[in-house]
Image 1 (cartoon, helix red, strand yellow):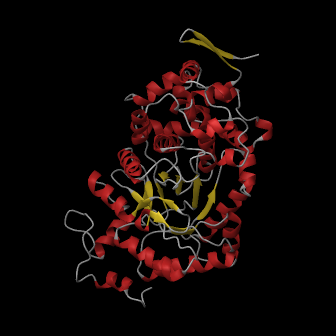
Image 2 (tube, helix red, strand yellow; image 1 turned 180 degrees about the vertical axis):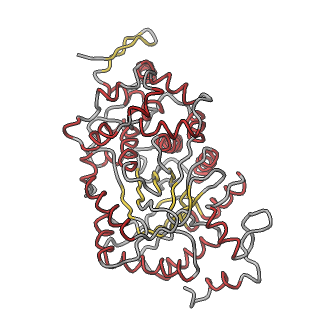
Image 3 (cartoon, rainbow, N blue to C red; image 1 turned 60 degrees about the vertical axis):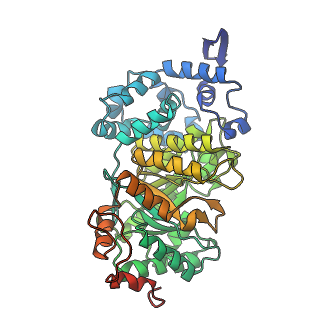
Length: 464
């Protein structure tokens, strides 16, 4: 028997369970339509939001969207929820929680204290009632700070991942793209390579090359080869200079098993990376990527909408105190986020929900070439995220990833955003840029000066 019903537009709308309410309340997106769970009309979408707004926030503690017995992510969320932290908002409905988040009561301190009390389904639910401006406003009030060799998430800062991918994993090509990015002041969050060949030997080669460059020029950053977590464990066993363990994660146990990942495996990898003690100012050693649609593409969504499952993936990440988390928002393709309107909305949702859960959220502002989107749309999303206090953005040479074959932001896009919004890189990285003569008197990136000999050496063949 349907549990939820409401009259909207003179029609009675019934919803058989909480998962149906959540799916129908989501803004329109192609992935939910592909799964057959989206609202069939805009009126039904409004009706679902009316139901959702009146539900107690704590309903999600009592009615699991995916059964507790069959999903370790559900168990993770419910077993670890801090009810004392939740207490200030525990009596609110989802709609009243939205109002509270937009009020002056929700400030950086209260939101940080609240985060351990929230479960992913709660933040997904409230986001469905928010306009884009609401998502920006709430995210901008969340402050999450992490550290390894640089400090990320500080006010007035915008971090960046330098992504020097190469179609054949050629170390010289990767080194050249890395040095190009450093000249633009990119790479304070991480220098992260997606390897073309996912084997341990190549992973160790790339890790060693990046670490040699970092040490030679005393660059205060961290490097990462975005290989499977099991490869990272083997690389550690072989003595590779590994800073961060990377893994793509999803919002259901079944989808993660499709990735070859379990919570216990991630815990093993975190412990192994921490045992190396490579961080100089912090020991946040994990790096996770997520993306709306990953569970659906793995046929492991259990009838739950993709945005809620994205928030559940954030819940997985939270359990491991990561240095970095980012959504690859438009990477999976138009089957899940059809056009720029859906990509922009999803990016703002992912950022806000991750921040509410206490994550250092970044984003790959990106799209595939068969999506209804272009670089102008990505300029809009990047600017919105910059005003919302995003922790870091991903940048690739020329905005075109020649290995993964998709479009992202370029080095100069991120630099330009910093200049327009008055944002700066991580303080340790900024000091390094200043020492190399790459900052002007106002602290903005300046052209390479004639006397910047130590940095100019990076461009010499022997430096590479």
